[in-house]
Length: 237
Image: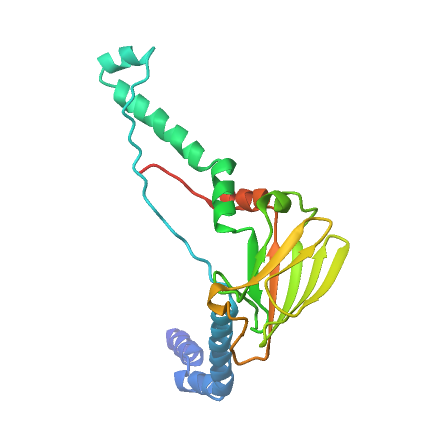
């Protein structure tokens, strides 16, 4: 009886043993699928990194120096050696609010003309032309603040310096051809100016393409400043 039980246990162990060679062989015969999966992942990663719009992060340090001491209850705190710390904390909080204020950010947006963005439509996907657009769009900040919506501008710049404009502001559309620049386009929302970049002031555009397709978006400066305010992170260190 015991021998039979022992034989049955040995048989069960033998039947339950794993044939690793057979198992590996079952996977090896499907090696093309593994290679194809790896290639697809690599191509997908390259495409994502190549076509993804780069996002830049900038950090800076600001020293806040307060030579004034607040009065009132601060005298009692100073007697305990805490007045300077409380005053410094209040000053830092105030300065942070000033730096984050829409007034300051709107002034930055206006001075740097960040409310106008340019894109190269000849690239796929289209790439932003920061400080490199051959055509500069001009619109005063006062007029930009009164725009009923984002102004969308499609431009075709020829090698001899002529420019075709298609401008859309809300439901209004404007089309214009300029033989040379600078030129202006009056609209109900304001007067748009178009000039060549300083390096192209001769009026000739030298490039691989006879016609360059460029688009521009003009937004309200206040809305742009609000967007930067949401992305701005200020913390004491």
